[in-house]
Length: 120
Length: 110
Image (cartoon, chains in turn yellow, blue):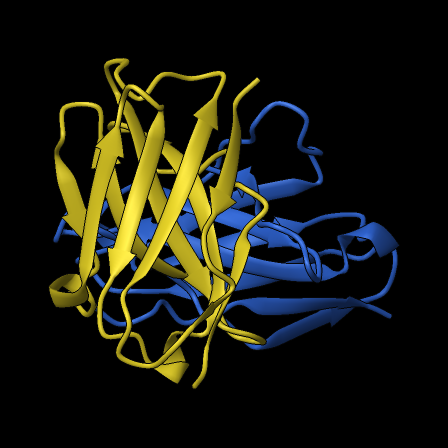
């Protein structure tokens, strides 16, 4: 069974950089085809895809947020890390970690999500 | 890339069938069979319900079905039940090798 667990700060100040970590269990990030990524959801709003990284270090970013996002992985810890620079109150959201297998095009499973509030 | 277009809300009585549409472009929904649907209860993480336009993961009720015509994908829930009341999101792969979600549809069981 694959489980994903997000971790990171619950509160960040405007202009700060957010760093979120997703720990994979039951699946190795170094296994061929495995991808880990992030999707967010502002309160009361829709899901928004952010970024994805594959086992071979191929990375994909949302075009609208690409300049602010960096996704990396630490295979020794089986973790995917997302950094988002220059945080703004509009970035307040629940951030979900998810898995996508190369070439399959869907997200499953999802982590429980981590709530991030941007406020001074 | 713009979000896919979904109706804000759809409602139906128990036992009825409802259909949620998801409209994109030839660069996403119309160009690929990588359309998926997710169910989300309040305060919970989304759950995969349909992938590859019309395939159901193991454990998902066969009351849920998907289809696509041109740039519009659809999710149909047959034999509507109270437990189906939730938000539903479509998602598509895009020509930019990224993903885009719909705005979400709130399903209400009357």
